[in-house]
Amino acid sequence: MSSFSGLEDGRMVSAIASYAVNALWQAPLAAAAAWAVARLLRRAGARAQHRVWVAALLLMVVLPALPRQHWPNRETATVTMGLDDIDLASLPPMQPAPQPWWTPELGLAMLPRDLMLALLLGYLGAGLYFAARLGWSLSRTRNLVRDAVEAEFAPEAERVWERCRQAFALGEVRRLVSGEIACPVTLGRATLLLPEGFLEDASAEELLTALAHECAHLQRRDFWKNVAYELASLPVVFHPALWAVKRQIAETREMVCDGAAVDRVVEPQSYVRSLLRLAGTVVQPAARSAAMGMFDGRTLERRITMMRTRQARMGWMARSASFVVAVAVAAAVMAGGMALAVQVEAKAAPVETKTAAETVAMTQTDAGAGAAPMSIAQQPEVREKAQAEAGVAGQPPADDNVSAAEHARREAYANQHFGYGSVAGANSDRGRLYPL
Image (cartoon, rainbow, N blue to C red; front, side, top):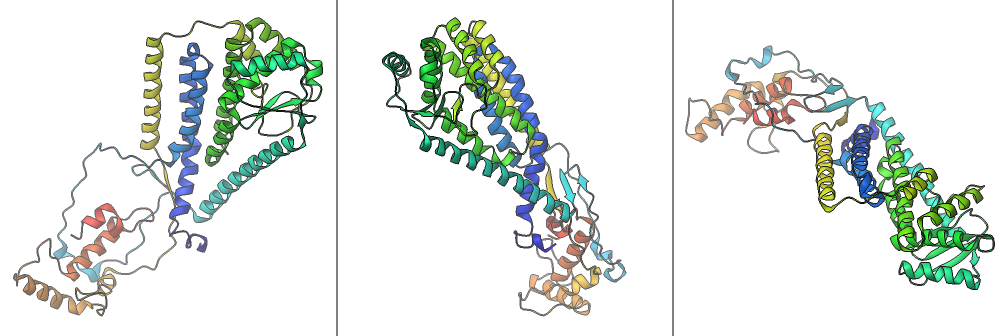
């Protein structure tokens, strides 16, 4: 298929296909490891669990790109052949090496070229679709800010705001009101967006809860972190395991902000009561945007349970041990992923078969690239000339000074016996060493 000819002999296509295929099984592996570590760190708090899920997302993206690691677990057999006994004319025509679809020793999968192209187009198409969705979401966010109006805080609401702002050490924050959102959200580094009527309808307790939560988002710069996660995850955005990890990131992020609000501003029981009342007022979905809202995680029950049953934090020894276990699990996942990585290549197109004698006849002499092709009849003369130049007339050429004819015979044998997949025998590891 000519579609592969312009992409560095299909290397780019092979690299993209290999990444996509490896991501299919390595992404669930990373997600399962993150789930196990997050369970281990339940007592460490939402912040530790959030970091675990962020690390899982990054591992999902990086692991499929790592090369396959061949661990030295067996000896390589040495083959000794008597090439002087080979009659080139009697050898059958050289056929392309058989191409099994799967070679487990090499982790090599050979796919039809049409299937490779379909895989490439599907993968790139999914990436472009989700990238366009992200771009539209960011554009929608910009339009929300553009169409919003400045918020007017009453004196009591202003005092609540100042209390929250000072508790989180925030600078100047732009406060806006929009009719296109259902709950308070934050955007960028210093923009707070409130629904229409929120300042008038919310009680002081509800206002304190909402503003404290959103100030936690602003202090953590969650908006830009979330954009960075979305961009970083585009290579594996097609995978359902990534969607599950991103949900966990959103849920634990909300829990982190809940904890920060309770630790700095609001009493836990008051926070829970206000959170329940605020959730009851959200009767319409928020406009699709990249803004950070206080109900993004959609796990209100889990968040409330966490607020009501706050456990004692882990000691430093337990945290250190958990960190060591988490690092060990990540290392094991990376080692396993690299050891079992798959290399995907397209099956080679049919090639013209040639006899070994024809292959030798096409080999040029040592005179240079411009020399005429060598015929079979010229082979003894070339050997004698090479022996005379080496001072060993009448003796076989040394291993490190073989003649062109001898080299050609060895290369012909390598092409016939050492090839695999789309790799010619002379280009394989054994084939490159054999003619020397």
